[in-house]
Length: 75
Image (cartoon, rainbow, N blue to C red; front, side, top):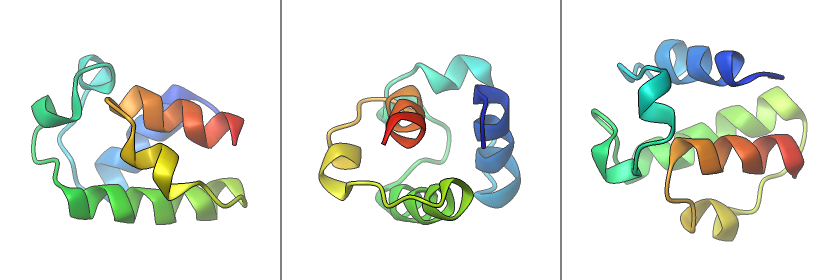
């Protein structure tokens, strides 16, 4: 996963979330279908995609999918 588009495909195809580019910057409470189980699943998928461990504490502080994306590409 290298781009925000790759991240969006992961959200749509692997998590089954009906998200668009506009949802990426929205608060997690505004993301269609989002819940805490999605966060754990997303972290697992991102760790597989990046080959790196992502800090759960940082992910829990994320306010948006964009924050989680940034965590994945900078961790």
